[in-house]
Length: 82
Image (cartoon, rainbow, N blue to C red; front, side, top):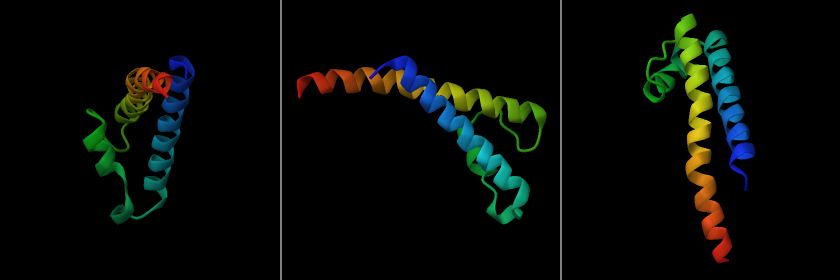
């Protein structure tokens, strides 16, 4: 596995998931919103504020890179042992 490809793929996956959840929150009643989970996972995120939305996008993207930087070397290390 390559860190760069996995990093971009995971980051875009998390950004798309974030956008879907924000869209869900716009069309569903408040009892079905996901913004509570995002507020816990993304420091500085606030639902339906421009700054909060931007923070959510950036942090979602960075989480994908964090996962990639930790996971890919571990995967490659253990895959060589097989």
